[in-house]
Image (cartoon, rainbow, N blue to C red; front, side, top):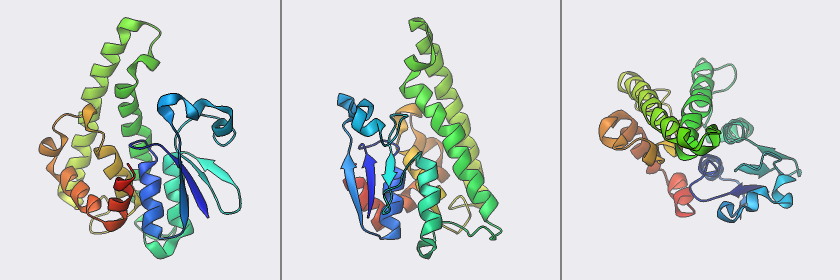
Length: 206
């Protein structure tokens, strides 16, 4: 059985939704980040980076990194149809979108929510946060334009784990005020993904 170490509303949302989609037994282990449990020796033994999420596999192996977990699970359970096969023409775009979301949009969100971590000068945090807001809007604008032309999902008519990842980031709206009205095609994707029974089950735990 899989065990997902999660914190409500954190980046564990996407792997949790993927686990729900692939419909295999799994256990949720809540990590109290507000009280620093993710920095305690027990959790650091699983993920030395001290970040959420981590996933323990049925064989006892543990892996971390949200996007990596999503890719791994989708590939390991192809019957769920969450990822194009390596030989599928849609595979490059699928990987490109997941990597873009985790390497470009998610770090900008982190600079917004944890701006004080990115400067040694206390007064510098406000500028970092302001720049993050502008950058996040720019990124969502590009995603919205892609979806307008090629949607409703990132791969067109084909739903994938990349859309789950996109949905998760779309819920972090403090960093992009009025996201739903500014970017209607992102909202359409989010509405489609959010209506899925598996995603609804994930949301109940978050």
